[in-house]
Image 1 (cartoon, rainbow, N blue to C red):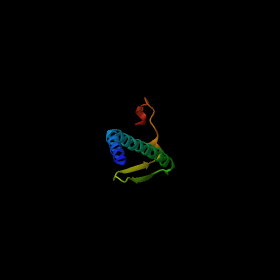
Image 2 (cartoon, one colour):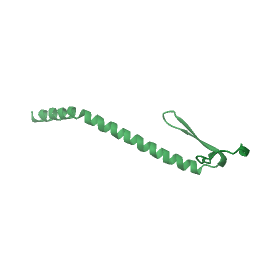
Image 3 (cartoon, rainbow, N blue to C red):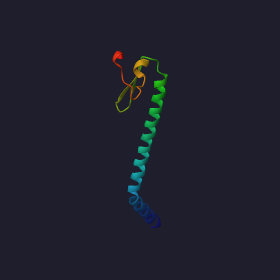
Image 4 (tube, rainbow, N blue to C red):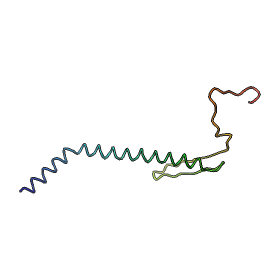
Length: 91
């Protein structure tokens, strides 16, 4: 009898905390996804740095998404200076 009361008490507590457990599981999954994306971004920046000029890398993900990372010549990757415009002779 004591064992049965202990089991029913535990199930009642588990039912009361069901929302809390769902929240904690969803939170852990979201944090893991954010950490995974952060690590992917860090690795992608490193790969771009190491790629030779005029090269591309195809990255396939398990969910079917395809990313194409291209590194072209220096003329196309140089950042533009804000406020700088082309003069008539340079067009």
